[in-house]
Image (cartoon, rainbow, N blue to C red):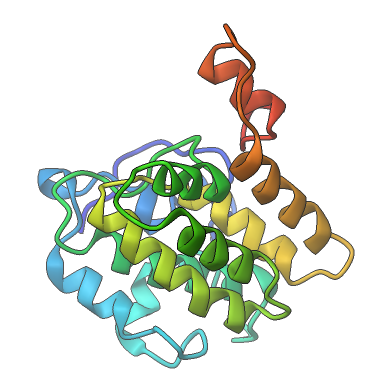
Length: 206
């Protein structure tokens, strides 16, 4: 598992003072353009488990702390890693696609014609209205499996930030509004996709 020099916005700080921030696993440059299957299998071992309970995942975290406590950042990274591993499994192209928020990806699924639009609506709404992170993660796993079927990408760094905010009662509403805006917003006639994404609050556009 290789990691190229450089960082992406939102990467976690390195635990060593004076070094560049570490890139999240999904942001790294992997041999052949995709992670090793053994690495993805290791990450999937964390599904439904608390951060740190799957030792195979330890080397993939960027938000571990010396005291071993589970911070909101680590909790969010754990969920994002397991979702990414499910999403990337068997895909020949990167599942992590910068700028594609969860609502945008779900909208592409809705409009694909491959699944019942009503069923996609229900699955998305159930994930967005979950009251806890574990419940949200459960429903998000169903969505990313469908994203994988249609090779729909997702910005996992943006999702990581969203999942951090999801754990804060004062910011969870903003996350829900952002996802809902991405999912239900339709560009006006003649409007470019980029402008529509900015109006809908896509990550990195504000």
